[in-house]
Image 1 (cartoon, rainbow, N blue to C red):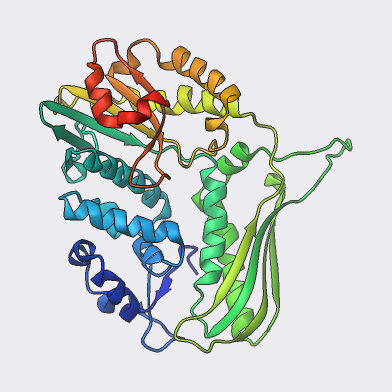
Image 2 (tube, rainbow, N blue to C red; image 1 turned 90 degrees about the vertical axis):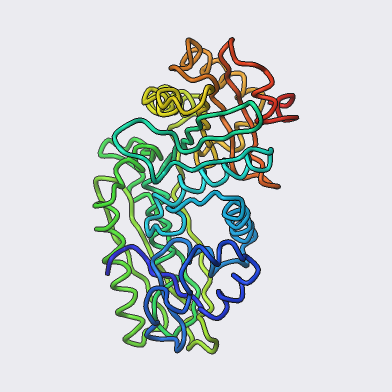
Amino acid sequence: MNSRPSFLFDPVEVAKLLDGLPHLRTAIPDPAQEGVESVAFAGMRKSERQLYRVLSNIHYGHLESLLRSLDFCIGRGFTQPTILRTRARGAFAPALSELHAAEHLLRHGFEVEALDLQKGSDPVPELVARKGALAFAVEVYAPLEWEGLNELTDELSSGVKNLDLPLDYRFEARVEQLRQFDAAHRLLSIHPGELARALDGQMREGIVAPLLDEVERRLEAGEREVRVAHEEGELNIRVRVEVEEVEESRERLPARWGVVSLPGLSGYAPEGMFDRLVHCRVRRKAAKGQAPRSGLAPISLLVVDLAHAELTSELAHQGYRTSFEQTLRERLGAGLLGHDLIAFCASRSSGGEMQLHFLMSEDGVDPAAAEALFGKQLARS
């Protein structure tokens, strides 16, 4: 089994949902033709496209909101093709950041042009936004902290939840610390960044695929309680999957519920995380100069979406903000690596607005440009 899941869905229900999303409906194929037929559930289908993960789970409010955002943007001429097509979760999250940036701009009265399909070897930003005399070349960057760890838990939970078996059940996926002490009886801890970096695609495949295969095999064999585990000694982790309360499904699609738990993570500080994020990642992205070198607009803007940076609570804490502001001055203060504006935002906010946390501006930029982008948020940033 490949660790990439196929998402089970009801094509009739998805079609009804799309009736209320007319712009999205015209941008994707008929759900009745998407993917392949389910083996266990008559009339149901399954797809590896990440979009169908969203379309089949609108009972989660944030996913329903995402579909409304997607429909809104398509209806105003902005289409993000990766969101519509990709099967890779790693590509889906950055594409969402681009979508949210476009929605923010559209709701602030800009016309937005997507440049994804024009990218080649030349530096090209994600968007060009125009409003009256203002024009911005916009890069969007979504750094994913602890990416490998998040991918591991997502692949486990999605894989178990979408097994094509006619069964309902409850499940738990756990990543545990394997050893608490080293040979000298010193306390061991797991640093999330180091663990995440070690969990690359090949490592995750070697963990997840055998676990899912074993769970599926034992459920097919009639077991009503399954516990499997995989140990990675060098990473000091044990990965467990447990399935309980197994019953025959009675509905058109299975009823499944699960939780994911991680080990205690330590050895990191928010100030250090933010400094490393800016110094190593944001600077590298900015140095590519996709917006300023493109020549597509007089003002260049880099939007850094912090929604997946694992710093959500610290961004609102004044003590941390002071340290973060010092990092920005030290790491980006001289010239912004050629950009006119760099905005540190979070896309997980309400009303189609990206929440502004920090805005850095070159001296020559007209303040009206920042006002057009973020309005009243400038007073709070």
